[in-house]
Every structure is written in structure tokens, then in C-alpha cells.
Length: 263
Image 1 (tube, helix red, strand yellow):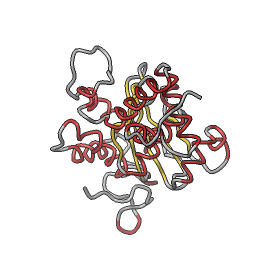
Image 2 (cartoon, helix red, strand yellow; image 1 turned 120 degrees about the vertical axis):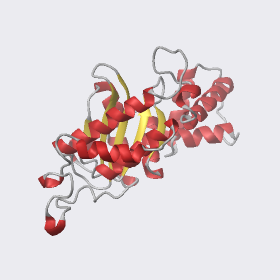
Image 3 (cartoon, rainbow, N blue to C red; image 1 turned 45 degrees about the vertical axis):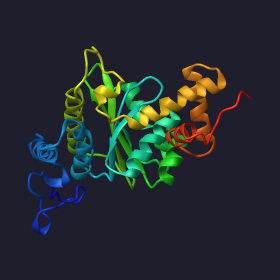
Image 4 (spheres, helix red, strand yellow; image 1 turned 60 degrees about the horizontal axis):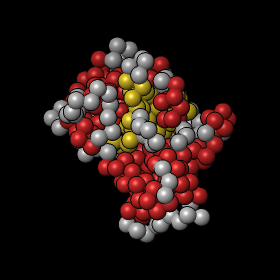
């Protein structure tokens, strides 16, 4: 898929707007150009491949360096797909901390644009996440809710390697991608559950990382004789104390490299 760099203000010859774009680097206002790129990006994909394809499309369409998608779940968000290892790591950091733009977007049901994690309001709103994100090479994060106006089922998270915001047109495109992502997730094969479930059958194997975390939670419950919430809290606390993600610690627990004692 050949798409001009997203934040070049003039992609056409001589610095004019590129195909399908308006001046200032924004996509076409009605979203037709973005819809065409999305359609090409997911063409021929199996249902389980679509979330990952859409993350890649988001990076093509917008001035971002990475994208990930996560679903709301009790305990921790379910990370489904990411455009890169860096984006997946950023999603895991937010899930581990239970804090960050993704968590705020889930709570508010509205886009959260953290335009500068290096200083100012955004750095102060999520101080630990901001520090870890900047250490990982990310300076701005934009979280766009998935779902309807009343029900937020997850987020599309966009990552950028330098501070900056999204224009109105770019946010419009991000909302289009999020809308297509929601439809794609709802179209995945599932049983008779009336609401979005956590089951692997519905997620089509996309939630492998989530399953590993909860396998580890079950082992910690047995080791400590505590409930699931307390076991997850201990897992997160250990990850935070050692500068790791909950998934990293979970894999060590499953492999019997880490054991939790009643102390």
C-alpha cells in the first residue's frame, strides 16, 4: 500500500496537497480517501487478521509511528493486535499500570489526546506511564474509544515518537478507523453471549497474551491462597517494582521461574 508520509504538509508535486488530501496535510474532510485506504488494507484478510491490518492502516493514514487495539475487560484490558513490537509494549505498559490515555478513554468514553508526555499537563496526568513511554521512545499517545456513544468496549491507541496533536481532520480519520475496528471485532465468530465476552473462541486466538496473564493469576491464587483480584494486584505490583510488564512476569510464573510466597 503506497501512501505518502502522513504529516508532510504538502505531498503533491511542488509541495501542493497530495491525492485525496486538503491543504494543511489533512485527509479529505468526508473521509472517502481514508475509507478507500482502509478497504485496500483489509482486502483479502481473514476475520482474525483484520484488527492487525487496521492497526497498520492507522499508521499509514495518520502522523503516528505505531498503533494497538485493546478490549475492555475486568482486571486488565485484552490486547488484541499491534502494528509493531513497540506499540504492543506500550499497550502492555498501560495494562500493567492500570493507567494511561487508554484507561482514561475507557473511563470517559471519549478520545484522549496526550500530545506531550515529556512535560506539562500530560506528563503530570499519568506520571509513571509518561516516564515509561518516553523511555520507550514515545512522546505522544492518542486513545480513541471503540463502540457506540453509550458503550465503550475498548480503544484504538496511537503512538507518536515526538510531541504534537492531531488536527480535526486527522482525528476524524482516527474515528473512522476505530469505527471499522469496532465492526470488525463484532463480526468475529462467537457463541450466544449477549455482550462482548473474554472467551478465546470469540477472539479467534487473538487474546493469547491475555490468557497467559490469567493463567499466571490462577497459579498465584493457588500459591498465596487469595482471590483473583488480589492475585492480579500482586502480579502488577511485582511487574511495577521490577520495571517490567505484567505479561513478562506472567510468563515467568507459568515457566516456574517466579513464585509468589505468603509474606
